[in-house]
Image (cartoon, rainbow, N blue to C red):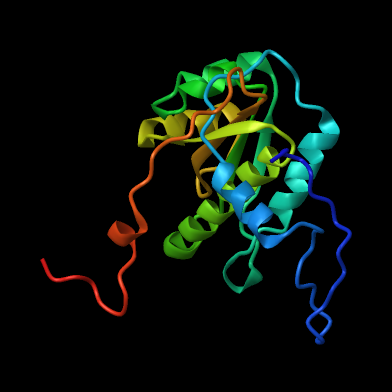
Length: 195
């Protein structure tokens, strides 16, 4: 399947005015695309065009959130020196060092449970939006000390939470397909199995 093949043409509705499918692709093609997302931590030295970045951000803007609060903000970092400085902070963010750009998620710090869930949704949406353009990504996180230094570096006030970074760029190598546990080990019908 060719990444980036989806376009907004299908306007079929369910009778209530809702789009059933926002793209003209069979369901299996779409779910194959979703399953094709892989973590990419090695990138080509090639800039991601601004129109692609803007489209990724537009996809992110439409990410769902609890009560449609839309709490997340995104700091886009493209300067090499800043990416290298961020990559040296505590946590799991070293892959930002070679990325074309990074997106750092800033949450208000007002509702930990809901914001954490929304932050994960936003991160996955950014990664899928990027992959639709053939741009690889990998999520990273900051330790408590790394967060403190990151806030200082990027001018983020004390209250907001910045714990997630997404490295983005064109993959240096074809992403590897990892193995997955069988569904029977992940999904249980009606009850958790007895040990």
